[in-house]
Amino acid sequence: MKYEPRLSRLVVLLAGLALSGCETPQRRANEEASARWNQARADVKARLAAEQLEVGNFEAAAGELAVAYELDPGNPRLVHLHARVLLAQGELGAAQRVLESACRSDDADAEMHYLLGIVYQQQERWRDALVKYRAACAQDEAGIAYMVAAVQALLQLDNIDEARAFLSRYRERSGWTSAYQAALAECHERAGDWPASATAWQRVVYSDGADAGLRERLAQAIFRAGRHSEALPILTETVDALRPNVPVRLRLMQAECYLALGRTDDAQNAARFVLARDPRQVAALRLLCRAMVQEGATDTALRVAQRAESLAPRDLVTLELVAGLAWRSGDRDLARTTARKIIGLDPINPIAGRILEGGVTSGK
Image (tube, rainbow, N blue to C red; front, top):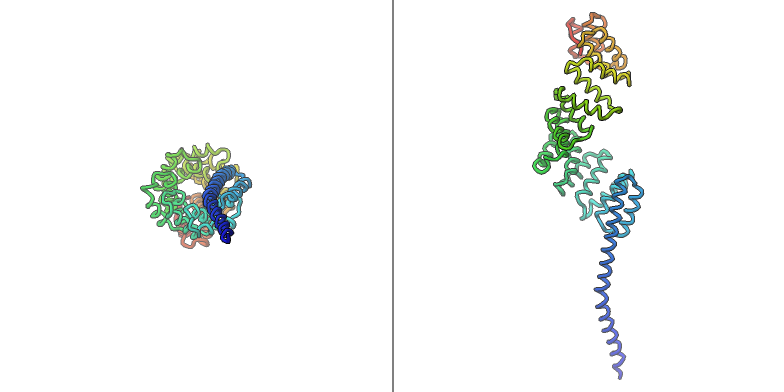
């Protein structure tokens, strides 16, 4: 009988162990099911946040994201969305803190590095941005956006040759894409290789039916390559698409094409169109002046050039135009006076030198 209390305690202990053995797997199963349910709900909230972000409802996006974090706080995929929401809200410092912390973790992925690169880029920390873009490329070589961002950073740092070399490594994989060709076109632009730039922009525009901005880039490249007859129809189409808010640079480029093709009336009309909206447009005055010279109206062209000089008295191109036209019209005193102004700005200027030596020059 003296062993009965011990026996009772043993029975209770064994029964407890038996019960706990049954309950533990069930409890774990319940916890896992609950976690999966929370993750599913978090995914839904994350999608809702992304949709709100896409339509510009930043506060609503932040609210949905906060719920997603509560449901699934350890999900590294939410970091991308969190950073994008913060960037959209202009919270650059907060986005930087979130992403720098994430990039130090073992879960850091290409998108985190890329987004941190964007933060540094907005801070104009181009070298730091390049480091992060390269890190993103290293983790995901198929990420075209990462490659393009790295090229843009290299161009900002004036590493043009390195940018082109970087692109060449992606040619076989991504060379057919518009993003690749646009990045290549920009590299050629910066290098001053306008024919190559035009070829790349053509691949972009004609493969995707690009918008007016990209068509302008194509027209500019063709124009600077000296192919005015090809550039003009593209410029005209772009101008028509942007009416009534056509940038001055497009009007002037169109006028330059007219002038190069000998269509002096069209060139003058285009220049006057610009001047009607902004009479102080020196480039338009110079262009009008050159069109008049082509028609033989030297005296009228000189008066237009002098008007441009009054607006830009230290502009060398304008001063050279005045000096050359003054000489051609027979006003030697004005030509020499203007030539001396030029020498004061550019002591070895050849046009001013010829005038002061008694030579003859023509208007530019």
